Amino acid sequence: MKILTRTTPILVLVAGVMTLSACSSKVEKPEGSYEVRQKLTALQADPNLANRAVLPLQQATTAVLAAEQPTKDKALAMYRVKLADKKVEIAKAVAQTSYLDEQYKTLGAQQADARLDSRTQEADAARYDAKLARQDATAAEAESELARQQALELQQQIAELNAKETERGWVVTLGDVLFDTGRAELKEGSLNNLSKLAAFLNRYEDRTVQIEGHTDSIGSSDSNQGLSERRANSVRRYLEAQGIASNRLTARGLGEHAPVTDNESAASRQQNRRVEVIIANTATAAL
Amino acid sequence: MYLSTNLSSYLSSRYPSVRNTVLMLSLTVVLASCASAPEAPVGQIQAAEQAIAAAERITASDYALPELLEARADLVSARTAVQNEDMLAASRYAELSKAGAELASARASEGKVRAVIDDMQKNIDVLRQEMQRKTGQMQ
Image 1 (cartoon, rainbow over the protein chains, first blue to last red):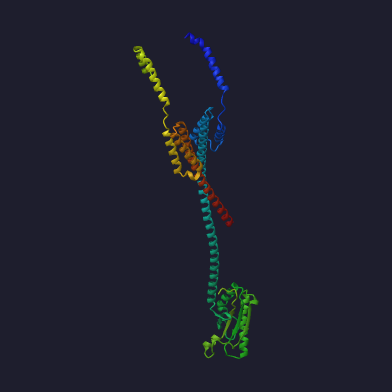
Image 2: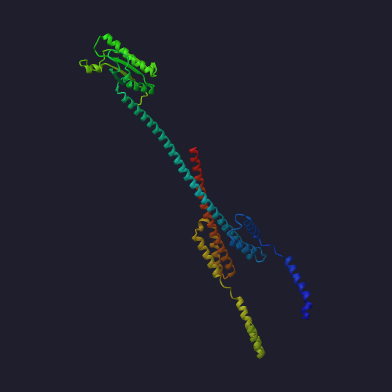
């Protein structure tokens, strides 16, 4: 024990010298280990990759530390560097895969969104097209409906006027009930038919009207001519008084020269005594 | 060791002539154990083989062929080293082979995900372009 105590300072000195010599003769880090360390550092500094692949990164770190161990055994040094390089690459690949996996999920959501957007838009576009088509159809329908109604209305009105379709137009025959025998003044009580005609002409302002007076063959041809003219003019004046522009109206008398039937019986003569109102067919007429 | 020391001291004390013989014997045993070749790294080679098989299963040859080839070459080197009774080299090659095969697998996985993502990105781009075209038509 005494000996040991005395030798302790010497031992410490020897140990110190050995340590110093170890330091001074410290072998350089093995070739290639610096590059592997740099690779590892870069991986650890990458914010996208650093926190992934924890276990492979630990293994890589251990392998790099081993590769940095100085040794005179060149084969060992080379082996350690090679192994460390592989471990670092593994950690990097695993981290990248994990990162890409995450992107894959994000992209998956994006793709789903894009698909949804696209489909929504397709649906919108389809709706939009359908709406346009519907609007067109509705407009066309409305137009044709209007035309149809107008046509129907016109037909009804013409039917009410007892008009007959001829080549010259719609012919409304006003019987002699309008006038007293030999007179040209309209009878107050039988203006119903005429007022319908006036209303019709007021409504269809593009139509011109020809008024023709006719008589039977009783009496002289001249007086019949005059009477037919006066009666036609009476009707004309009435229509003018109802607001029909005079330039739309022409009136003439045809006397006894254009009978609709023979003058043999009172009934047939009555048919011949008449005023005919010819409503011109216009180009815009719907019928 | 404790027992043998006791035994040798017992024997040498009892029969001093035996002492040297025992010493020689034990020395011989120690030397023989040192000289006998270390065991072949069977486990490490098997691990390398399994790692290569795993890499091949996920078609690493399509994504990381150089890494896979290197792993196979290292495996061959490991086996050759065993035949040459260089078990240290065999162990190192086996370890390198295994790491190389794992690297091939890792790169294959990465490559696959990357391919899928590239595809998706293209899809998304196409969808967006179509959408812009359609939007253009609507306006």
